[in-house]
Length: 228
Image (cartoon, rainbow, N blue to C red; front, side):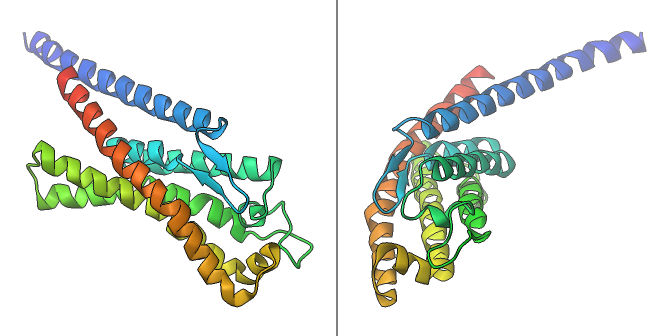
């Protein structure tokens, strides 16, 4: 009798766990595919004269919020890997900052800092929005739809700024002289040019993320609740 009771109570739990794992794997596979598809189409990375503008941060942000920082960091790693590949295969003026295979202006070799710029900010894109969402979840344990939507707007903006701010900030700190040489400008003008890129590219990227992220995440949260 005891054996029968034990079996009947544990089987549904196993079914729920397996179902949850399959669902999570499906979502992860979907976001991985989205990142890769966007990376290798004009929709994901837009080649500009000075830098490659991107909206690839959007699926990374969404994935991080929904699936947690580890999976978000993995999606960010994919983002960085595709950026590395594109800068190797189709170099721009600034590619020395994203791949060590392109020599730094004034040097005969590339820099390992390029790998830091290429990967670390992009991986953090999948982490910082999750941290913001988690922090607000503790401050407001029972979020209504309006509060959640506002928090997700902030999460989208934070994720986008994480990418642009860390990438361009590190370029300024590490490659200021090389950046000046590559663009044929005085070193004392580099900060102004970089800030121009941050506002010119970064602000639109933040707006895009702030619009798309709350809409998509809200829809996916509701569909997840409905599926339970």
